[in-house]
Amino acid sequence: MPGARAATSGAPSRVLVALAAAVLALAPAACGAEPAAPPPAPGPSGAPGARSAPTSPTAAAPVDPAVACVDAVLGRLDTRGRAAQLVMAGVPADGLTEGGRAALAQGAGGVILTDAAGGEASATQVAATVREVQEAAEIPVIVAVDQEGGRVQDLAGDGFSRIPAAATQGRDVAGLRADAQDWAREMAGAGVTLDLAPVADVVDPALGEDNEPVGALDRGFGTDPQRVGRAVAAFVEGMEAGGVATTLKHFPGLGRVRENTDFADAADDVTGVDDPGLASFRAGIEAGAPVVMMSSAVYEKIDPDRRALFSRAVVTDLLRGRLGFTGVVTTDDVGAAAALADVPVGERAVRFVQAGGDQVLTVRPGDVSPMVAALAAEAADDPDFAGRLEESARRVLALKADRGVIGCEAPPTGR
Image (cartoon, rainbow, N blue to C red; front, side):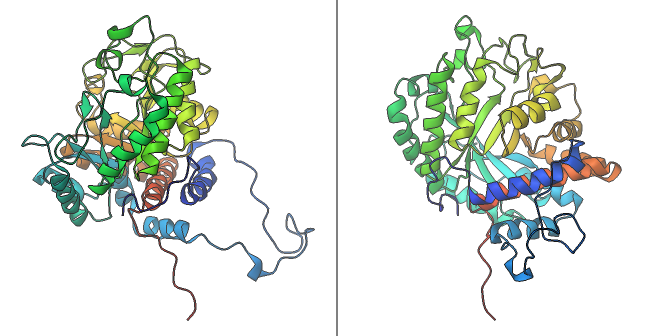
């Protein structure tokens, strides 16, 4: 169940480390990258490595049961089922709707709890909704929520603390870890797996409140990358200690744009691959955040022709390559975002996965069907994309195993 694992002090989990190795082994074939040297393995006489000391078959490294479990779940899924695992759909926090039920019937891999239809949902109502969701799901799902604090707090009813805005949280970095742990315990107790926070964006002090997506809403921890990085790490570590995974957003940063991509196109003509503002994301990755959310803006110094979430230069080369991130890469909401209005719904999912992304988030449950159909169709036409799809499905399932969402207990020993 969510929150059942002990705190890991920011260290990557056994499941995610092992699955990252498996994913990296798939990456060259799927993405056209230059293959890495394979690990040494025992082989017959005359084969590469045959000069090494002979190894008994019984001395082979034991199979990690959690990895074997993920492999088993993945093996039971056809292409469409794997595609569905990559989509996360919106569900009101106070009850599963017919639209949400239909999305789960499509095999959606996760849900995001949105504003309650009847006001602020209590912890009791949220827990009931999560039970409904998991009972309706074909494979247990990740349950996410936007719980930053301040103006962005979707769970604020009875049983949930009022969380201050990040601008306030950032003033007391020393106390933030303990506070985040308390907030996480409340969420985990209601069945939440993943918080779509913290905001790691560093706001340009020259913009301040003219930075609509972050500065104007007090969503950032500050304007100094190092101080923001310390706050990000404290939030990540506190949430983990309380049993909830975290999401760094919005990579590679929305602190230098004016427009909010929820309502308009946005572009950054300053941020580059060596930008000091990336330090806050690096700090969150080192603290153990297992998910990174992509920005929907264009970064002209990195890839002037594509929005970040559709850019291989941003997702694969910068985030995975230069920053070394091996976890799940997710989108911001791609359902209602005005910045993506010119891209067909299914194509939004395909372009993201082509760029190296894993999890497509939409608050509109009706988007699940066209997204799954488009992903499956692309995989049927393109073997390389099919490999890319499998890689992402494996990452999503590894996150589920790591959080205790899918049961990956060790198999019984003996006869």
